Image (tube, helix red, strand yellow):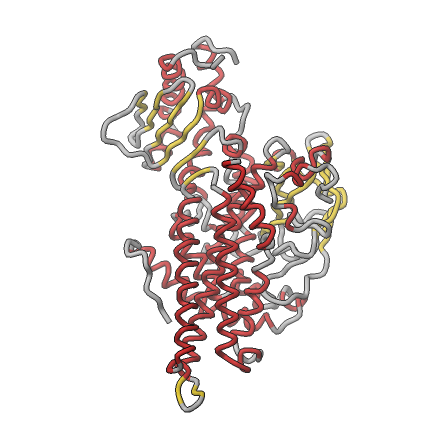
Length: 131
Length: 411
């Protein structure tokens, strides 16, 4: 059974996570400095989450935007990734995450993710997920 | 000699980059490579060698950070610019291009993990190094294992009777390494760090491997004497011996769970670069041949006035242009997606090294007897190109592996 029972649930949890990340005083500023638009194409459940360069999170498909980096992954992979149960290389290697966009930009974002790793267990718990 | 670029959408910065690296290749790399070609392998790596002058210059210019995100002080070039960069280095010296390429390999692969420990211990110190005192190598090949270390996805890769000689055993928070890497490790004699491929779980065959970043300056590591070889003599290669060497657990960046597929990613990264290096070499040989044919007279006419010479030059030109177009397209594609699609990288490497060899071979033919003489640069380029058909995976095995990838998609 999928970790996220519905698209709404996934938006609720991952939306909360990304808002926490982008509001973080250091990581949020670093993200804005990168000036990139990231599109997460989620499956099981299906849905899209966009991170906009100004630090805004959009759950759904915003109109007229083009992503610099697209990541395709399942809700379960996202959950396990933020719980550090699976690393980016393993996820990429196993085809659990597929990224499109300049590798240099993807690599640059990885160190920014630390506050999200720290915050996710509590956020997942808050929304009633098993961790 | 300059050439037109079929990509009419190159940005101004990319044009400038191409000119700058080309100038460096012609003025710095090529004469140094020619000088080192005449030296013994031990002389090549001696402290007073021009090898070190060149590597220091490249580090001072930040060339070693071409893949490092600017966040850590790297150049962070876009994929097309990276191809231009590597092709032009290959134009000056394919040996120096390989030496720089493998030097940044540990840091580049580490940047895929980029946790705080790796950033502080591996990526930043490497990016900050401006005197070539931190150099990497890609330590995968072994005395008993060459191209078979690269054929992830094939049955032999999971045969428990075929495993890496270098073994890693976990003790506490460290990995203990024992075994030997072969004389073919590029930068082996000069590297301070290795992107090292080891065996962890022998029941899984080669697939039970691990990839770690190993400090080569520690007590448990010894180097063999540098290899004396046919071509790319400016590229130091040599054995590395591990005797209870240690690697902290944080630097075992890949374990058996993902070793097979990560090996495919590493091959894809390496091979797409080989395509760029050898496109540069092919262009270099073509330029030398063309210049020679304009100056040299035979039968009372310049060589370029002979019909068969025109045909030869045209075929060389076509090989250079197709090598550039293909290797650049592959690098642009594979550095814009993750994971990269390995069959394209393998194909680029096999195609471009063969094209470079064919172009050099025809160039030697056009030079006639002088092409066999060490007085003429083309003789060195021919030897450099010959090595390319074997290094980074022999073309025969890579083609089998690439064919296996294609067939697996549909059968």
